[in-house]
Length: 277
Image 1 (cartoon, rainbow, N blue to C red):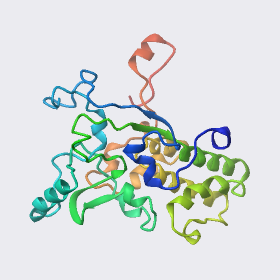
Image 2 (image 1 turned 90 degrees about the vertical axis):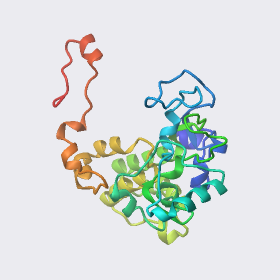
Image 3 (image 1 turned 180 degrees about the vertical axis):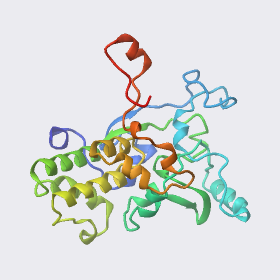
Image 4 (image 1 turned 45 degrees about the vertical axis):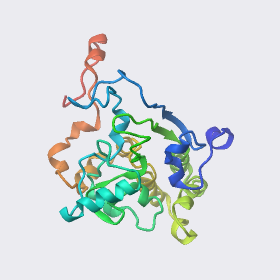
């Protein structure tokens, strides 16, 4: 509660402003990785030949759409290039595609966060892939490929609000938990009829948190750990519909735990490797 009530951090009025690369040190962000442009020799290239103009600084590029993206229809190739050029942009990164059809199709259409999290078209031109655009930096002059200076967001105040809502509901039920959930949902919808969930019982509130953390914190590295904490990781992944592969083939029961690093096992002979690894 100290972070919410006594810190200098505050929720921004507009969800999109949280991710504005021109305002990377805004009041909602508690922790981010501070990247800068024109830093050479800090990282290995992403793949052979990836070093750009003598610069190996590729990690921020992981959160931009890939250079070789194409429209869904071949005849739109030049119009897409023209639209990007007119905006001083290009698809100048290595990708943040949305593999989960479940995420893209179930994200509420009336949620104001949707355009920042689902992009299947650009300037009215349908793309071949669906992207999560809130971390994109398409400005090729100020943010060239493999030389991005955009910070990597790690932790922000909205996450704290949702933690507080979840904890209060688990401890005392939903009555006192709405004070933490409502500010997040108010920002995400136009009208009270859309955001107000008053009347939920404890289980209903718990399930609302499942969804709210998914929508609010998409691609902010919380989802896997949330699902494990709630005890639903395997069920959710196995029942979700994916665009390019079947999760039943890839996910196994032991994936709920990560493997213990070899150096830790060597340092402590009392440790045993987690099952399945």
